[in-house]
Image 1 (tube, helix red, strand yellow):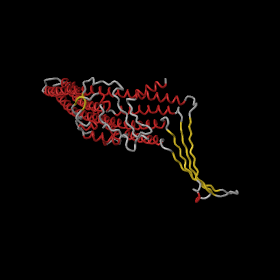
Image 2 (tube, one colour):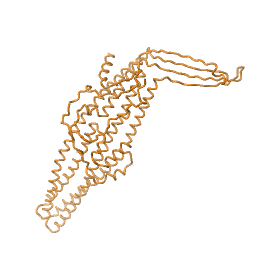
Image 3 (tube, one colour):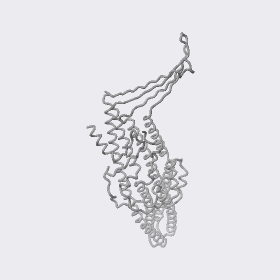
Image 4 (cartoon, one colour):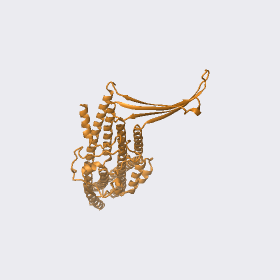
Length: 476
């Protein structure tokens, strides 16, 4: 039963892994994305569109907002979560170096001197020695440990790349939200000026006996309600700016001053057809991280299994001693010892560790498959969101144009006494709502662009910070 499970896991993981490590090997290859490991659709269900004709590794520049691009670049360089991930990458690299060091013998030197007294043999003696030990990797315990560490290192690199991808998207989305809030704040202040005029007109007409005080009270109500939205928008803008400051890795202040300017919401580029789902999934660093984790956990099955087999250790010593330092090397002695050990009984601990390693690999396999499904879900949902945002913006632009015309007509007719104040209030409220809706739709469209580009792997140039170098290879 145990061998059946092991073989099944190996067959399922084999398409994911390229493990070219052995006593004579010298290269660690990254895991390869299998085409048949999970059933991928041939095309997207939502007759897909996706950003194209720009460098999606730096897709934020396509939005045409210099401040946004600057803040994203600063976040990628200064974000503290990215800094932590980079430190974990360094830690994984050192763990790999430690694992590979086990292939080589360990040497230690010792030396000392003795001064005797209060007996007939009182005198001085000196000694020097070198001790060596080496473990033969007969059944792959060291080799599989090195494989696991190598894939852990690659997984840490993909994790760093994915965190940068997500961080760039967070900053871009927050800046888009800040731009929209600043625009809505400007609209509220502009509307408040119009409502001040409406209130003044209502008072004049009331004083002239043309209308009742009801018009004045309605104008006051509308103005106060609009005025109340301004502090809320200011608070929202401050909170968004402060969140961006944290992402950039600095204290609040500078970003808020930068984003308080009234700048149009970024306009995303035109869309083109998506690549095939299999191509998109390959471009996702989170999928590559899951593959590397699966490869590492599969290698650890071999580490656990090796404990069930004999262990060969060679130790050797070379030493010398004499009564004086000048004659220290006149007599040199040495020895070599080979020890073969075999586990006989440990209460089932070693076999339990093998079963535990298999279970962990099975869990990683499920996690890898889930990561792929999540990637597909994100792309499909982002396609729908982008298309919906485009459609909503078109409709809201038409509504805003109509509401603006209606408000102009209502104001003119009210001043001429041709309509009541309630009609003016209704048209002004509709205009405010339509203008805010346009800004929201523009922000949704830009955010959908960011979301879709990220979903298809944008924000990552395809390079792994943990790619093997000439000094970072699998040990022989």
